[in-house]
Image (cartoon, rainbow, N blue to C red; front, side, top):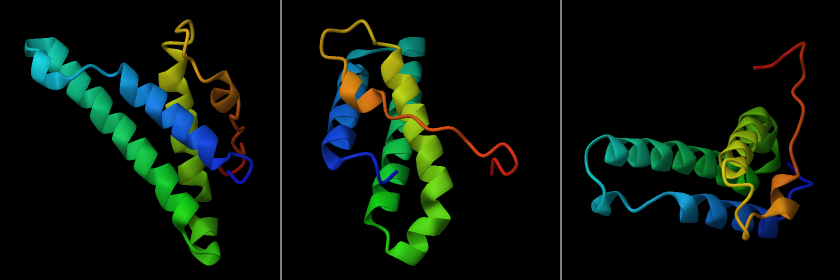
Length: 103
């Protein structure tokens, strides 16, 4: 996570949140889907931000969760990879998990 800059975080967050429609304009299933997507994105954003603001000893405990959250945000962004504002520089920073200890 230390390779990811604050600017990359900001770009990816802005892009993902900007693609999720305003739920007040939707009804029915479309509204529920937008609410679910917003909730999922917000949780991943908070995990990344919590990790980045954590003290060194706490950060060691939150690294894996933050990495998984970052990967999920990148996956959200990939849905709109053909969008002209797609933040390729931010979305390229993905990580591999340790297969021996994935959790």
